[in-house]
Amino acid sequence: MPKVGMEPLRRKALIDATISAIGERGSLDVTMSEIAGRAGVSSALAHHYFGAKDELLLATMRHILAELTTDTLRALGSTSTPRERVSAVVAVNFSDLQFQPETIAAWLAFYVEAQKSSALRRLLRVYARRLHSNLMSGLTGILPRAEADRVAEATAALIDGLYIRRALKDGVPDAATAIALVEDYLETKLNRRQAQ
Image (cartoon, rainbow, N blue to C red; front, side, top):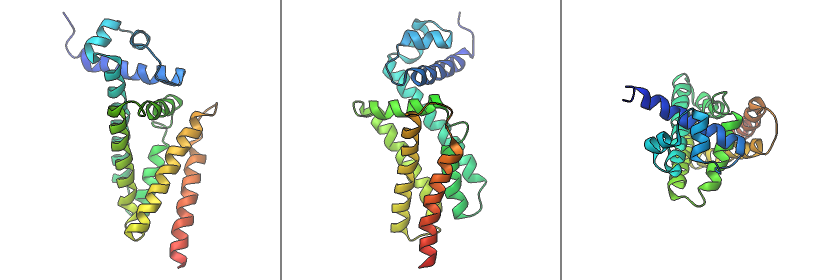
């Protein structure tokens, strides 16, 4: 008889194992058996909880997005000015919880797979809309809406681009440098606006 309350723990272990396997492999070319082994469960149990590998991959992407959303909301809750809101959104994307080699590799692999998977493409669109909305929540308090929209789009592209660049490098991700690059862009745009 299964132990009561084990399902959420095993699901989480399988999702963590998926992120780890993708991070190590650098692609979604991992098997359910490999993931299950990393999670310390049988392949049959992994299939029981998630069905096919595609469902586990979707659950993993949803998990990553949910953690990012939780972290973002927490960071935004501690701000008091529009500029702080923008910086909080940038910082949370490069936080210790988000900017880990395995998570970076998972994001890159999901972007590649989204070219073929409409379900993953939908999740990435949700992410893009949330990122844009969160940036706009601060930028519209600083810039006219049309300009805020352009700056939000460019800032999001910088964040995503820095993830891609990070995925192509060896070593520990350098969050401070990534944040500094994005903040430098923002300061340039905001200072230019104030000088007008």
